[in-house]
Length: 558
Image 1 (cartoon, one colour):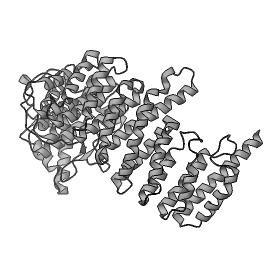
Image 2: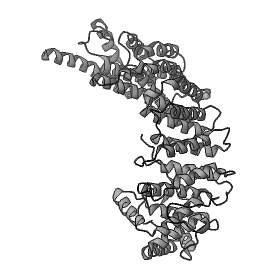
Image 3: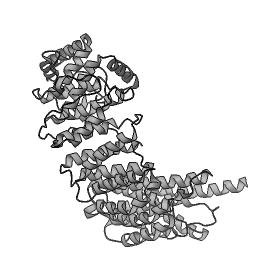
Image 4: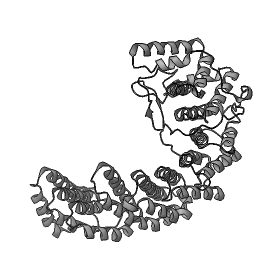
């Protein structure tokens, strides 16, 4: 299942920090390190005692720094004075080269220390993360080898410190710790050197009175841990994680929206390891939780994350979605409803349905090419909800008619989705779309007229020529429109008609030879229009002529 790239946010420091042991993915193009997705600060929970996979420190206490004065060095490494900063970077490099084990231990202690300044903890986290995760595969190989060569007691203390930091009051420290835990899990899980990690994380979630910040950071650690698809976990482990994550998504049981958001994001990655295709109970459990998270009364970020999960499921398990189509359509109605919905939610909602269409189209093409294609590959169960989706997409187009950049994003996504729907359901889209076109193509608002023409343009590849017969006449009429953009869009769409559906060799055609003089007269006249229109007219003439050329070539071959 494809994963989304992690977002990056610049380090909130006055100057660029020193480079870590290797160029990690948190480093920007200029060499400035970054941390991803800073979290909002809330109350601090108590430290979480316990053991990691290797020998643990006594009583699970915070680790004391192995080297003195690392805090001032980290602070100087972010000083705006270039001389001070460079000197501090040199000291950090010396400490690393002199004793790598103690250097990493000191960084983990700094990261976990509530007494250290937030900016120093942040930088310590960045350097520690870059010490175990490189930007390139060759860097990663070296960094993994260096980590594996560390003394087991040192590694155990670092891991314990990271687990304790999940309960920190500092959001960037928690975030860095979550990332590093995920990375170390990738390194250590295959060799079973951190066997109790998931158990520790699940105990955080089940702990009586656990603070929202601890649960949020723990869920984020699970998100990063399950980002690595090549890891292997047994069924009981996955079921335990799913139960904890889905419980945290429940808005009745979990009042913190930050925790619920972290849970939905974690579920996105855990999905890869779940037996979604073959376990009905597991699938129902997951889909119920996701559809609940996409409800209209949830926070926009949570709804967006829920639709991200649905999109991932659609791209991998299209055949298992049949029982849930009515519910997902209901959530779509809510997401695209009042005033077109929130942009991020609306875009991801449209992406979900575009993915549905893309999967259906691909399955049908596969069925044509291969005899072993599954009999149910047509996915007929998608046709009814897709027909119901068309009016929602048309409504979305009306609400977002290219008045600003945000609305353009939604408008273009809805147009593209409508084109995929047309390819998927064919003739069934025409009466739904034509009702919209006829109601808008002659109204006073030029944007509405232009939108109506755009709808004509995107439904050319699915329906039959008989159903699309009125299109050419409607477009010819708009070549005389008083607004330049409407005329240009009409000419461009006419060009698409000629490009996609015009050839005299076809048994059924959009227009006959008797219509040709009228079409050429209109195109010749519009060719003298303003450049924005005339260039589209030239394109239409080219595709019209090419259709005849293709037909002549075919006859010669025969």
